[in-house]
Length: 197
Image (cartoon, rainbow, N blue to C red):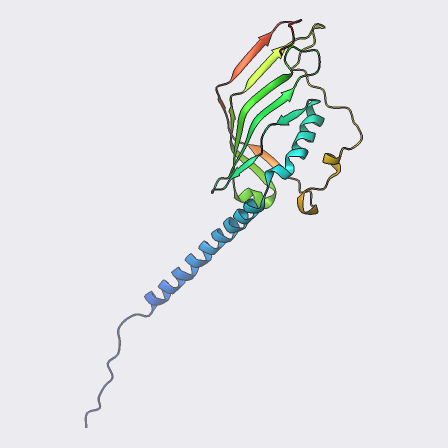
């Protein structure tokens, strides 16, 4: 009596296993990329740059002895490379100079890398200065307005003592890769020029 033989499949199971491993590895790689990007996007979405404006103004004043003014709100445009935009900025001159400002800017745009923010690193990919006007002059005593002196130590102001948002004051390392100037001007004035009204 002939026994009925069950046909043996000659298909090699290894390709199917390989396909599974490719899916597993691909999924792991996608997850490894997606999680940091999502975390950075969540951080940027909750980040309000205007909360840090007083600290920026205080830091500039301590470093240069000049007053920084920001005329409008700082805006954040969300994308894979977020962009911060500030309008109508000026850096003051000491009294006695013809122009009240050493530098004025119509707008500043800073394009920032997303992922380094998770490690408290501000990597500015491109800094665009729109409409900068630099007023170089000497006063009646021959002092130049481009000579900076750090501000003398003074009692802490509320802007300095106020804690950063959420009660934390993280320290960020800042790196700048490229600077672009658009429609810039340099104005030279001789000593004893009359103040600009």
